Length: 538
Image (cartoon, rainbow, N blue to C red; front, side, top):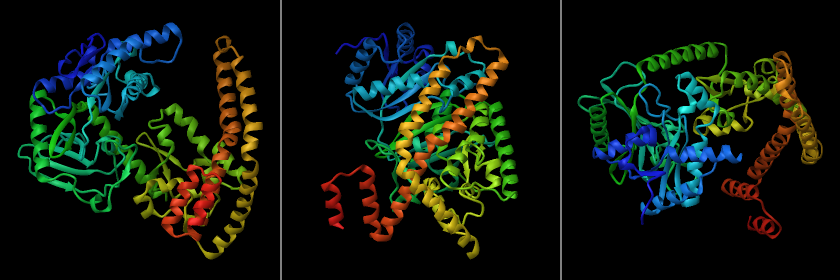
């Protein structure tokens, strides 16, 4: 099959970072040097610019142009199809002064032409986000000169994977190597989804200086969608043996010797064979010092919070929507999520009374740029002296348990007795809301939102003064967050509470494994004879 070379290039022939991005050029160089890098190809920056030129001309959402798509299909066929990893490779990526590590998207376990084209399109789109614009501005890089190439590589079905720093990035111990590893694909380590095994090696001899073997709760495997729980027998077992560690040390030495400066390496091991997925220079010393300053100030902040009887913290699900909120975004979201904001108003509509402390300060904290929930304060969203707290041991095993109300009894008998009547009243309110919430949302809330949006679109913002624009901002923020916010979120709160009641009922009346299975079946949606059949089976 003859493949055009206009919009794609085989990975081994990637040299020009302006054409294939920093990551693509690095991987091409490593392949030519003989490193064990998975093969593949790069969709170059000509394709990206063509896609965005088409969007500008026709006013459409960015998509893969037909001639580019055809060339990608040919390349994919040429490499034998199968499962691939799709990684961004911006022209400002993997530079010594601005690595952009983790800023753009990576998609794993992509199989089939249409899924591949969608992943490439999503990589392109990830360059046009607020986070990237802020990053480029901070590093003095003109956004208009940055383009996106996309690396398509054969996916290694890793038995274990992770990252390695050939010099300690958190301090001045440059003669030490740092390895972080987990079972399965390395995205759980790169994305911070698991506490990995951490090994420190003597950079000169490869001797293991320390090894911290973590309780590794989840992993990703090729061919499966989403994270899976690690089997109990493997959770606290090291995922690297002595040969793996020695091979990683050798790879680190060889990579650093080849490139010169210390390297940040992603790697994978399958069937005992070590693969190099990518390598980039470790962040510059000035940024290391800045990171250390952030760590120091964050630790001091947490010490002060703990002294004030706050904490511990667990990452809140809001972090999925706002992984790295800007200062402006957080200045809007934090008061909204407090007891006195729109989020608190939703709780009051459901019959709860957030405590004065929660009304003022809320229960969320921005720690090192990420959104965390204070598990000590959050129960006060229901009321002051709420008679239940979170089970910290359970949260350590399953952080997602923080998304449900706490269940561990707390406080004196008289406090719990007083709260029980209050909670019974709130429960009655929720049951009443559950009967009309869906109808009210469709027939009242949605039309009100549509009407307001229609009126707001008719306002010519370009004709307003700065003072008028600020006034419009405040009016719209209040309307969206304080008026519409509680009404749009209320159905989800009602559903969550009703679902928790259902879960409690099932666990009280069925064997544990049967209750969980029945809950999953109900959540999937059942009809008629299916429901009767399941009930009869129990």
